[in-house]
Amino acid sequence: MTRSLAELRVGDVDAGALVILRRLRTAGHHAVLTGGCVRDLLLRREPGDWDIATDADPDRVAALFERIVPVGERFGIVNVMLEGKSYEVARFRREGPYSDGRRPDHVGPAEPRQDAERRDFTINGMFYDPEGDGLFDYVDGCRDLASGVIRAIGDPVARFAEDGLRTLRAVRFATRLDFCIDEATWEALILAAPLIGRISGERVRDELTRIWTEGGAARGLQLLFDGDLLQRVLPEVAAMKGVAQPAEFHPEGDVWEHVRLMLGLVDAVDEPTPTLAWGVLLHDIGKPPTFQPAGPESSRIRFNGHDVRGAEMVEEIATRLKFSNRDRERIRDLTAHHMRFRNVREMRASKLKRFLREEFFEELLELHRIDCQSSHGLLDLYEFCRESFIGAAEKEGVLRPEPLLLGRDLIAVGYTPGRRFGEILRWLEDEQLEGRLTTRDAALAEVRERWAVD
Image 1 (cartoon, rainbow, N blue to C red):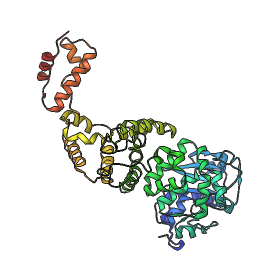
Image 2: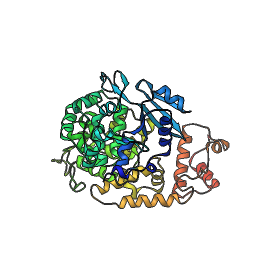
Image 3: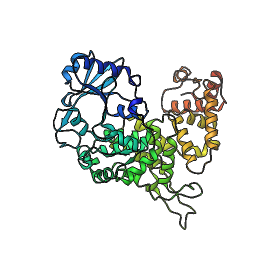
Image 4: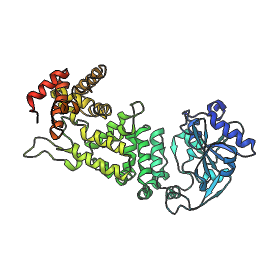
């Protein structure tokens, strides 16, 4: 339910944003809240960012505030830093053509109405003066907020042509807010889908990450497919559609339906990490290329090595979308290791403890839970690993005990450094994790018995 203008209160506005608005007005300038924060205030949501539009140019803003970070002075934009928070302050502007499909070739000062009319969607085109003239809605944003509609401002074909990333933004707002996309806007989005190929990998990655983590990810996946966007930005994911799975393990249907259901469960996770969300999306990415149908030599469908192939594909996707090394490695590990739970009950204590202490284990365990709940529904291996992990974490040194012997200890009793050191130290850790060795003297005696001194 949207909030009426009469229900808006100055106290709903961030204190730092109010300081900026007041200082600009005191200096004789027009200044208003703009964009997403106005939308979120009307939707009774906590704004993530507080953006301000003004008739003051960047030099004038810089003169009024102590800490300024230039971010787009060419476009009349600076960030004002107050109490450790950043506030974007942008001059009201009109824009020239977008030759590169991302940024306008030139900008110029404008009246507030002109500024509103160059924005992307009506729900993002409103201005709000909390201590003066109230709401300025030149584009019928309030109407569309109340109706739950994502509608491009003006000509939707022109809006998408200006910046192809707006196609993904339309999907994100529709899924996050559970709104529908206006018919004309949707038709223009489909026509504009090829433009996404002109957008940098970083911008595409960030927009997709928000679709997977801000709510409504399963619907977002379907909208991306229906809008011909998924096939262009993640063709490996689109390829999962129609790839059958063995019904005894996957009664929910094909690989696409399985992943779609998993994304739906990500919504229920409290603040899901981007790497978990991407891991859910990509963990079965290797199934289409490894698909082996049931036939004369096989009683059921198989995907031999899909975890290994999937990890290779994650590397390719992460490179294309320019993930950080850390995130690339984490998503790859979630994909590469998601099948390891099958044998946890049969693992030796040392192998299980090494698995539990993997840096990615907690995220992998959550992925496994979601994986099971979206297929056969059996959580016995999840509970076994969860209890093992909790039990080990409660006892200091269980997963990472202090080594009984180090390399220098072996050298001290006559062993020569070399390849054999690794074998000895690995065996010692195995025995320690298994509980068969607990003291330094016993460890040294066992080593001397098994490996002759050089």
